[in-house]
Image 1 (cartoon, one colour):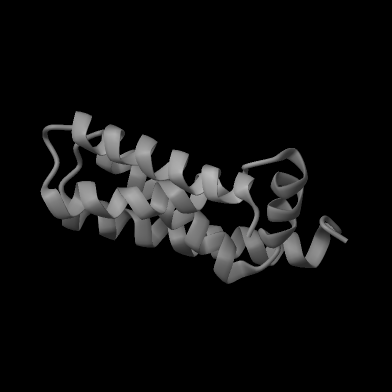
Image 2: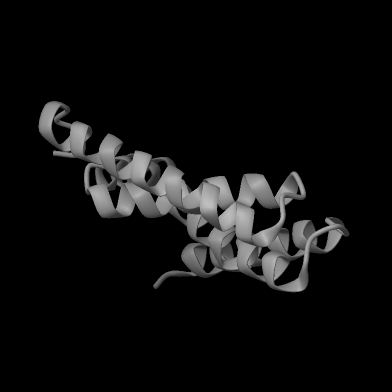
Length: 112
């Protein structure tokens, strides 16, 4: 792993930690889970070339669902939705992300 990747991980973790600390109305576990989720999403877009390659990864239904789950959980956490409701709603978005990934795999030739 080169230095730019390490810097991207550090920046993502710091920004996610600061963001989680700013949100005073969420529980500790909810704030703590947003940190690695935000780091995962930001790490995929650290350069333009890596962003294009990660768009190709969205053709995988499981990875597409995981990215959708993470993004929706972070969004719901910032809007102070309780933990169990955020997990419940994010699971539905995970399924929608999986369907979107399946459709992209079948009909869209991206990342090749």
